[in-house]
Length: 375
Image (cartoon, rainbow, N blue to C red; front, top):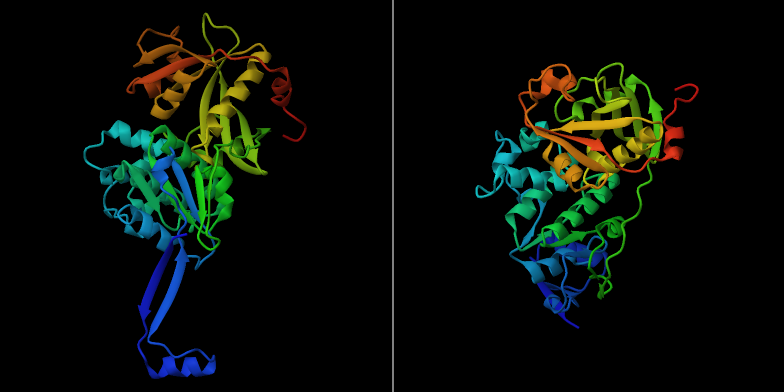
């Protein structure tokens, strides 16, 4: 058993001596504290994510500083230039593609927000962009004190899952130092240390908790809660059919579907908008929700297409067996029969990628996609 011994000089002032008398404390000029550090040699086993956890005063920071002094950081130590877009404060040797991939992977996937200064972001967005900076600045191992301390617990849990997935994908090492036990099953650490108990435990990787999403048929007014979070436009065609996904009865994701008139394609539909609210980004809710909606539409005899320029969405669709690529590049100017002509006014200036849903049909989901009384 290893012990960290701390000594603090006590200045013998009148108030200190009064306090000793009131509470019958032993007069002393030095305060001594011992904290157990039973973390073994971490090089003995491969790992990516660690968690040092316990109540306030347990000695978490002391242990982390003792083990990872140079790597230990917290949110206050990360410097952001007040007038800069957040992307400009990442290491200069990183390409913009690498930066945006990293931001998206931790659940901060809104290009308009990438252009804002750090101080203009919400608490949840600041947490995620801070984590992206930590991973970018510390290529080998990153250790974060007060992890998730200043954000609400939904952001903490979803964000922990996104960060852990990113760390493992990048083959980095990350240690969270936190007083919150509710992140453990979302972070899925390879090891846990509790200083107040002196207990160290290696863990096997498990599945994070499931996120149950309820699909509801919604009216146009539902768009107002999602509009400002879309990466290109806050506009939405009023004829769109809107489906909203609820997590614990709270809106989390929206997909809007429009008819797709075409001279060759019959019964076509296109995905007009898909938005995941910031608190729920980074764990694949949007991609899964769209796939489920499309499986129901296919069971109704419809063909579904999507066009996107968002790099994270393009990567996800390219990897998915449920989607097949139909076009990549700028929209060609070939007249009304173009499969993408419905988007010509907005997408010709951008490099976009188009896909067709090729996954399974699901009759049960098709039934859910029909309007219900009162909707």
